[in-house]
Length: 496
Ligand code: MN
Image 1 (cartoon, helix red, strand yellow):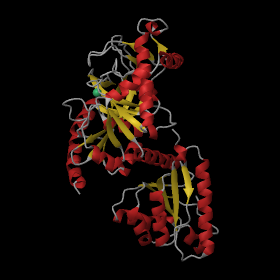
Image 2 (cartoon, rainbow, N blue to C red; image 1 turned 120 degrees about the horizontal axis):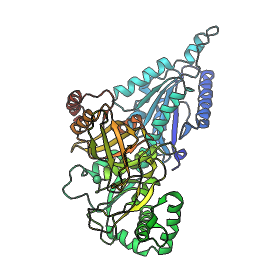
Image 3 (cartoon, helix red, strand yellow; image 1 turned 135 degrees about the vertical axis):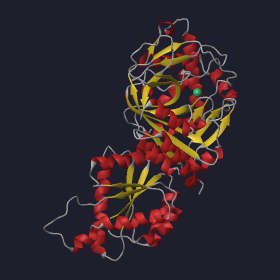
Image 4 (spheres, protein in one colour; image 1 turned 60 degrees about the vertical axis):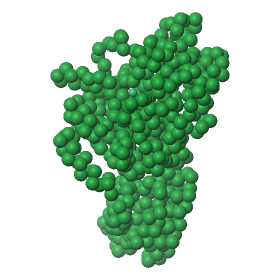
């Protein structure tokens, strides 16, 4: 996943009142900043400097160009001098790209002994950016405002969070989720409006018959499966009966064939995410388990039981987390531990948890699955690495999408669970288990979510903001009763 291919157009605002000398200095400074941004490994995308924006027509043209550009994932604006914002109205009105309003200043310090009115006119973002912020607010435009000195590390980190969210958004605009079968029968929360999803996120949510996968599966040779199994053996531990001539090796080879067939199919349809359902597996020997884990590890979004919303959100999180330490996985709240002082939630799924969140080397094992009526599936078993993480989920409220994020701390699993043959994570949600669960349930959050140890709340908030959807945060400060009031007020805002 190459995030450098995404361009962020740097549009520096000024006006034509100051004369050529001042405008030349503005352009020089913007060039220096662009070069420095592009040298900084902390910034994942490519910053592309555009001509200084000084007239309404030129500004509108820049936004027209950005809308039409397939490489432009977002726009960074900064007013080096004053730049009257009525000049920006037409451009902003047609803009379709996420905006980062960078509120900074070229010089770090005030040059006390030499400062004069020329300097003041040239370096007046403190006032130009307020004019710029006003017009966004006046026009009810969503954007991220990041303020601080442009060489500061924390500012760069926040710029990069936005860049990654914008990259995920751009990826979504070009992305298809391949639904293999429909949603699990009678389940409410995995349903949703696929048309609205495409309007909001760009995601094309479409269905392919499981038979298409079964036909491809049947054509994968034993030699192809054995070749992939060599990669498994190099990368993961194999349970003893999975070695050459082991009695359950065939079950692993079947998953290898599913992985190869599914990947071929995803590539041929340019899909970035997919769903499966255990209720529709005609022509496949097992529920895809190891295959789903492997494809998630390679960057694909995944949702079980037809949950295409979480599949796409997993994909978006995979894009945002590209190259960062930590991982991203589809996740499900399974069961609780209510021992006083040690309250925690155990998350897992039937099989499909991504090894990018694992502590140590995952182990491939084959065990029966009490659901779906198919052969015993191979899967990777591991514990999730401990540390800070987030759970994010996306629900459809009928009239809008809502994203819910819960900040959690994943803890080491102290007790062996020899009879639980699935990958799992044990976490303590903030502010505590019962308040977090109450807040999540009041918000309508599903049992499915995206788990990430690589991302923080800010990534998901930026992504939700640029997608123009509701965002609910369950963090250290949340009080369920107050959240309930907040959600009711939010109804008024979102019915606009
Ligand atoms: Mn599930």
